[in-house]
Each structure stands twice: as C-alpha cells, then as structure tokens.
Amino acid sequence: MADLTTVLEATAALAGVVGLRYAKTHAPRVYWSLVGLPVTLGRFTWTFGTTMDVCGLTVQPSRLRAFMVRNVARREVRPVPPKVRRVRGTSTGLVATLRLPAGLEPSDVATASERLRHAWGVQSVTVAETKPGVVQLRMTGYDVLRRVSLPRRHKPSGSLMVPVALREDGSVFVRDYRKVPHALTLGANQSGKSMYQRNLIAGLAKLPVGLIGIDCKRGVEHSAYAPRLSALATTPEDASQVLDVLIEEMESRFDLLSEHQVSDLWDLPEDVRPVPLVVLVDEVAELFLTAAKKDEERRDRMVMQMVRLGQMARAIGIYLEVCGQRFGSELGKGATMLRAQLTGRVVHRVNDKQTAEMGLNDISSEAVFAATSIPPDRPGVAVAGDASGGWSRIRTPETTPTEAAEICREFADLAPHIPALAPYRPVVAIEPEPADASPLVKPRPVTE
Image 1 (cartoon, rainbow, N blue to C red):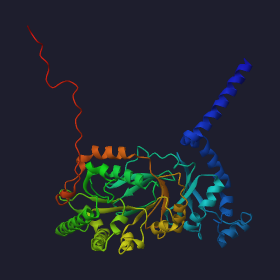
Image 2 (image 1 turned 90 degrees about the horizontal axis):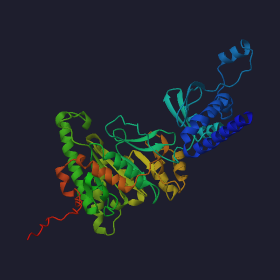
Image 3 (image 1 turned 30 degrees about the vertical axis):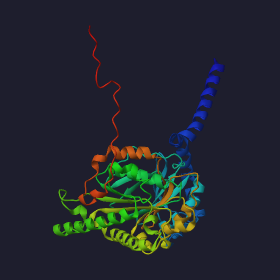
Image 4 (image 1 turned 60 degrees about the vertical axis):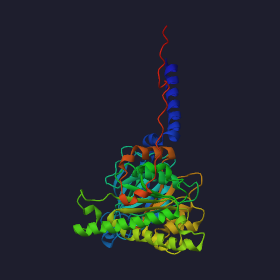
C-alpha cells in the first residue's frame, strides 16, 4: 500500500510539472497566476530597497530625518527609496504604486525601467504618473504580444472609441477620435499596417459614423469594405473631387455651429447633429506624387484641402486616418504641414531609421529606437504615441480581409447617406441567389 501511495504521489507530481510546462507555453495567463505572480511578488518585496539603491532611485534623507535616525533610532543613515503605497497582481503582471521622495521625478523612474525589468525578471516595466509625486509601475510577467486576443468584456466608454490593439502591459489600445482626432500610420510592406487598418475599419463599421475611403491603388484595399463606405475614391482625380466635397461639407457644418452658437459638433442638439465622418487614406504618397507637370496643380489643391481638414475639421466631426510607407518633406509641398496636424502616430516595422523619425522623433527618441527594433517575424507589432510624449508597444490581433469585409456587409445599414457624396458611393454587387435544384415547371403525368 505504501508503494502504491508513493507511485501515485510521484505520478501526481510529474503530471503537475508537465502541466505547468504546458501552461507556460500554451496558457501563459494560467502559469503566471500559479507560479509567476507569487515568485515575482516575493522578489519585488524582498529586493525593493536594494534594487532602488543600485538603480539610482534613492535620495539623501532630509536633515531632520537623518538627525532622528542617527540619534533616536540609533541606526545608520541610508538613502531614502520611493515608498510603496500599493501592490496588486493582475492576470498579466503586477501593478505597484509608488510615492516618490523629494528629489525624484517620474522621468527618473522611466529611465531606469529597463534596469528594473532585469532586476525583477519580468517581461516589461512601464511607468505612468497618476498624480504629482505618485507613479504607477506596470510590470508584465510574460510576452502578451506573442499571441494577441482582445478581451471580450472590454467595452469603450465613449461614442467614438475603437479598441484596435493590445499594449505590451496588457491593457487595450483604444483609438479615441474625440481625444486624438487625426492620426498617421506608417509601416513597410508586410509590417502589419494593413492589418491595423482592417481592425480599425472593422471597429468603425459597428459605430454610427460615415466612412470615406481614399485608395488610389485602384481600390485594392478598400473595395472589400464598399457596403459600409459612404464614398470611395480610387484615383487621384476622384480623390481631389471627394476632398472638395468634404471641404464644402465642413463649411456647411460650421454654418450650423454658428447658427446654434456653439463651437463643437457634440454641443449641438442630437436631432440636428450631423453624423461624424472618418476619412481613411490608404497610401498618402499617391496623393503627393505626380508623373506629369500638368498634375501638380491638382496635387497642390489636394494637399491644401487635406491640411485645411487637419486644421479645422475636428470641431465639426471630420477625422483623418492617414496611412503610408513613408511620409516626409521629400513628398513635396505641404507634407510637413499636414504631418504636423496628425496628432496620433502608429509606426510599424520600417525600412530605415529616417521613416521612424518622421513619425516618432517629435514624440520621443526612445520611441524611435523601439520602432527600429521591431523584428520582421512579428507583423502587427508597432509603436503608438501622441503629442503628449507618451508611447507604448502594441500589436493588433490577426484579422483577415474576409472577416473585415463580412463585418462591413453585416453593418451596411449604418452607412449614412450624404447627398453631396452620393456620386462617389461605391456600387455594391448583389450576390446572386442560389439556383433552385427543382425545375420551374413540374412535369405532368401522361394519361391514356
């Protein structure tokens, strides 16, 4: 009996080890909750003071504190580390709230984040300031960007918020058009730029907004979303005309704001509020590059119209979503001015450092380095930032063109009818009904 008990205990232990190894690879959330979280929490608790000291995140105590420690507590005066306010575990990592002593600032902790990551053996450490003097360390226990799936329970709190990707700290990256009205997405071929746009369109298709596609590659990208589009331009000539119509729509909406004495679309009464419009530009370079001198006038007009939309259209609910492989002053007149209006930036893997600098250099030099470090075997990984200087690594879940097109067909009834854009609304082919196997005329039996 004792031998049988020993065999059962050994078998259970072996099964547990095999199960944990399997969970580490195929169910990292389970492995983190069972093993990673307790180990990391213990390491963080026992080595916090030492780690802060060797990472240069301590300050000399005040004279009063040094006097009390030396003469009352009879202890050696040591540098003061940040004070841990709260520590809590999550399904992807650990979140610690720290109170910074006088002399430290959040940027000091952010600079040391890579050293903290190695010291505590976690995948990544990001730093966010919650209020003056208080920062939050978000530690990720494993690579959440290896297999990306957005939480099903995540529901955006705003009317124009689209969950697009997953951040490296486990939180959801949301494209919020109310806060960041215009954005620029850059990326080389096979970098995941198109997948990011598919996720964005699939999310926008479910919202009460108008989608306007500008795809000068003869519509090879946007034609699949035709049921949900209010307008589609597939040539530079059509794009110029669509932009002219949008400028007229912008001016009429400003007249409506003036009539109601408000300065924002969302301050209008709901019964007179126009539907928001999102302009999706697939390859912005096609709007700038010309093959003949006669096309330069049209090019300059298109660029001027887009700059006007970027400068003023936020207030009347027209938003720009610009994509391209490269976007710099070499494209021509007005490129730099337009890029300055595109607050949001998402940069995938690029072919050269200069392209990453075009998108992220005015945000953070560290973001540029992160973008140039994206490996080619991880399509969909990108660096997202905005004018506030904050940035993070993200990755979009895999969405096929068929899935995105099916969502657009499902929500085709949400596409608003805009009379001025009616001539540019794509024609949707009606799928033929399956032929009936039974003949149309039933045979009559022959009687004698």
